[in-house]
Length: 175
Image 1 (spheres, rainbow, N blue to C red):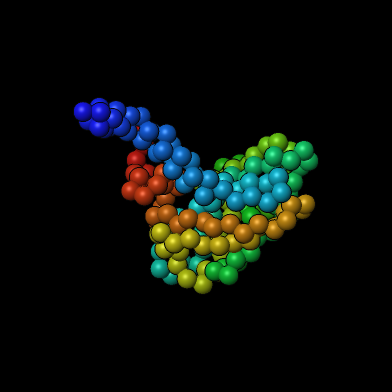
Image 2: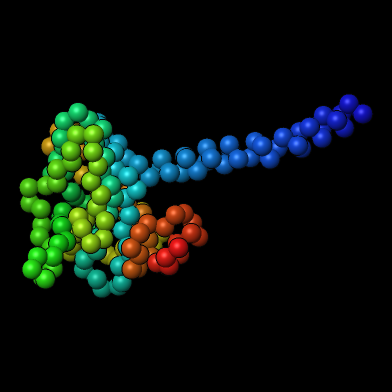
C-alpha cells in the first residue's frame, strides 16, 4: 500500500513540474536567437524569404548595447550577397531608402530596432533565393566590439514580423 500512495503523490506532482520545465525549454529557445559580442546583443535576426529571381531582400533584428559607451554598427558581410545598412523614410510625401554609409549608432544602455518600414539590412545581388526555414549567416562589424557572426532565420515570403516558433506564423493575421 505504501507504493500505491507514493505513486499517487508522484502523479499528483507531475503537472506542477511540467510548467517550470516548459518555461526553461522556451527560455532556451528564445536565447538561441541572441548573439553577443562584448556589450552588444543582436536579438532575433530574421529575413523574409525571396521569390525566385529576386536580386534583393532585407534583414531585421534588434541591437542592444549594454555597455557604458555608445557603439556603432559599421559594416556587414555575407557570402550570399552584398549587405548594406539602410533607413526607409518619407520626406515631403516621397519615400526614400538611403544607405547609412556612416553606420548606425546604438546608444549606451539602449537599443535600436531594425524593422520593416525603418532601419534594415539590404541584401543586394543575392546569389540565390532566401528560402523559408533556412538560416543564413552574416558578419556584423562594430566600431568597438569584436565582429559578430549572426544567423538570420528565413520566414515566409512577405512576412512583416518573425514567426513565434514552428507552426505559429499566422500569415500576417492581426490578433
